[in-house]
Length: 444
Image 1: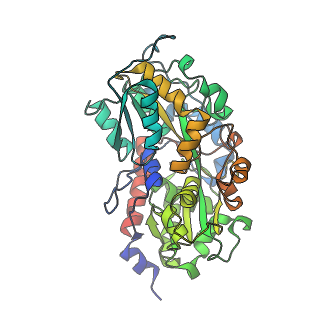
Image 2: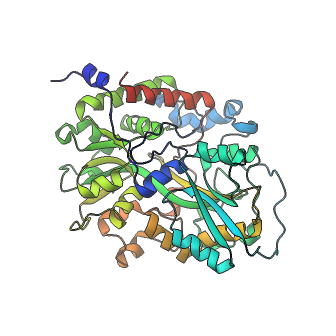
Image 3: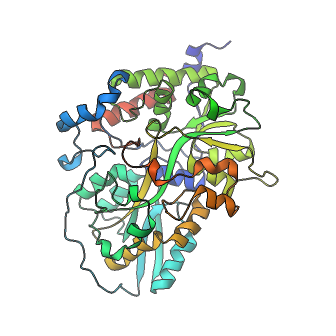
């Protein structure tokens, strides 16, 4: 039998593949989502807290008393569901009642395959402008290019982990919500004034997802959802060796090991906890030699993988877009932890300070939140918009998704106070996570 040291020396079984909206959405969170066949190593920025299983219950109180240690760019407190932050206004919003700009080009900045181009084109047709969609691979690239004026879009997709940085850098302008009535009527209550942007001063929500476990019930004998600790399936997956995968992401991979141990502070900066998670990940190299990639939306429906750490949108995308001919998707399964015991997250849209068409940019935000537009875009991306009109039961009744994937659709209650998000870390904490993950990939 191969020793664990041998497996570590050989390093992780890395497959850096890109698959449509999954990769785009990973980029939205600041991950180095790779192009097909290329290697992307930059990682998501993330947040500050304390760590140790023994103090998890006291965490909100401890962080409140240590607020000085939980500051981000511009000395703005790092936001958490239990510690919402209203971002300072860096300018006055545009006046109400202005007519939308006409003619010329309306410019959007987004991740490849993360929006239906038909949705973009129809917006341009509605307002008599040419639409131009530019793309980027990760948040580092996006913010760098916008800050240096290499690209000057009117609107951009942005992850809330990087929002403070963009606000402090004055890249974004405040929103006049008079132009965005759909936010208050169509969007979940929990995201109308989110913890990272109280009052929706700079953003509106785009799509939501949970990170959990995807599998094929015709290949995996265990009922993972019924296990006392579903996360432990990866450490029991020796018999599925060659068909197991974990996400190529420092935060998601390491937190998988933390959740397996029952440690729920996925924003910890405790080096002891991070080192323990690294050791547990290394054990997987011997147990199942997992593939480390972002291709689960493709490999689960094709049967190339049977068990994979995944986001809810991956399974929806697998069913809606990546099913091979002859496979009905009835054996796809997804599990995510109860609220507070596993990560959920969402992406946003914002308006650039340098927008040439600021009124039209506001109307774009409102347009994306229109129920019919959001639904059509959902069918393309596979990622759920936080629309009050959309539910698992309605999607099943309309035969959009099968009942076996009802667990991929969430309600407003899954977000807000008590939920767990991958949030912004201090620079020191972020480096700690990245270095631990790099050691895992290198097998050292």
